[in-house]
Length: 189
Image (cartoon, rainbow, N blue to C red):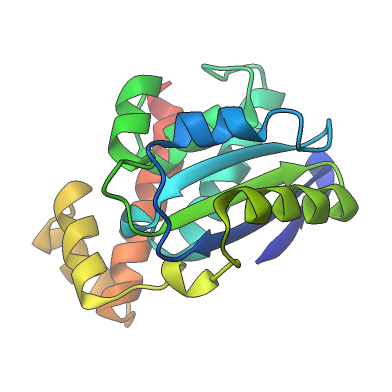
């Protein structure tokens, strides 16, 4: 899922990888050093906690807006994205919550660059490093994923009921609840 954030001069690719076996996201990110174009940042997430591409898109968008306004906790869009995606204020808590873990089966990844050509080169570097082809289907919701996201993001029955009264599906209600948490983080920073 390629998106251009025109007013911020950024292009974002959001995708995933299935059946990867990586110790942790930090070592993966370190291995990418020198492989990426200079204008690129990459962040990995445990896809089991990603509520569709929308979740990561709004996390990146909020991160970019926050850093442009100099309110960010870090100086990196990738690190700010983890904070927003996890709805956590502390970097280590955010990484522990939504970052790759030794038992993560599927990874979600965002590649953030200044232009589409750099994004393409960045995604090629990630693909080469993980040894698998991108698979956006890991971003989709499933019954197992809905249950885990609902539990881990502490989404209440009342929230789901309110969302459902607007006529959205149960899965979309979960996505909307997570995206709301992403957006609300900036009020707590």
